[in-house]
Image 1: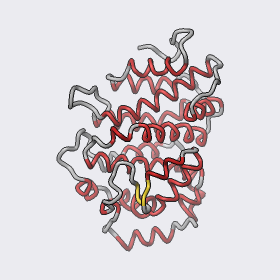
Image 2 (image 1 turned 180 degrees about the horizontal axis):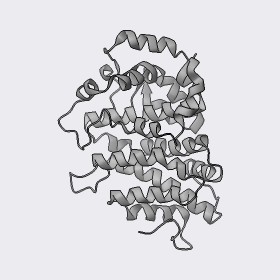
Image 3 (image 1 turned 90 degrees about the vertical axis):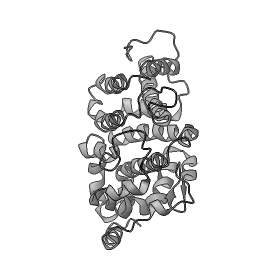
Length: 292
């Protein structure tokens, strides 16, 4: 496999990165290896690979990164968003190696900042910038997915924005318990990858052609359900506003309507965002974790 240190001289960084990603497009284990190599190439950033690789392993187990074969195989949307993330990070590495800082895209520029100064904050800004850009660029592919898949695209984005806010605005995320935010959000923390993977609620297969969102939500464990519906969802609008400002992506505000995520899930269908489980416990949590 061509590595980040074997790109030919004279190739533009964006084209070189795109070539590396294209070479592993239909080989999920090779995708994972390419992502791992990015972090392993520099001792200073190796520990930051945990959350991203945990999420990729979950994607591979589900089969969403599998090669497309006509109408079957993996998910065009998940594959495209994952490629955006890999490509941005690799381009940043190539640019720094070649001392090429000529007008990179915003996500690539943030990856360059992370590589120069690796901290949880710079990692999140780079990672989430790529993820959000991928979401926005591939909304047409999201429309082709089954309803339950579209619902969990919104759940994933909401969780990503929430976890980052634990670090960048812990008061928004945890209210009076804000002091715990930076530790909980650290991408080097094993719990971060587990929370993002949705492995406790979403079956490990693709496509989910015999399941509706309501079916999956009924099976969600009690603690995860309380976190989603009692802590994160009540903050949805403010989380999107915070991320839009922080990442310079005002288009994020188009992905939330009436306080509910609306990237791929129809904004008119709000029933999935209204929980009837443990109402008293949820109300207590909402009161305990008051951010403003």
